[in-house]
Image 1: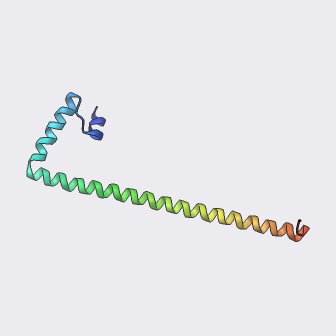
Image 2 (image 1 turned 90 degrees about the vertical axis):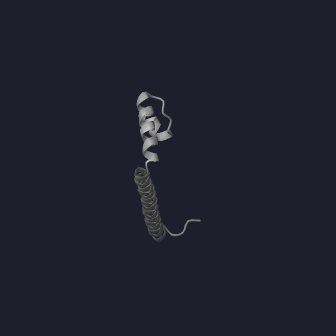
Length: 91
């Protein structure tokens, strides 16, 4: 129920109802509200940074895969050139 509360904000158990009430009180206190907002901004920035890191990793993998495919194609072309040199053009 705690995980569900964290994910959805729905408080269905005694514990999550207490937590929700405490969070509601904390949000009303100006100092806590400021801290809460700063933490939310930091969390959102960290999340966005993590997503960008993931995208960059994906781009690196894609470049590596492209390079590997290019290398395999070059090797196949070289192998084909060897066969052409050995056996001539096939019609």
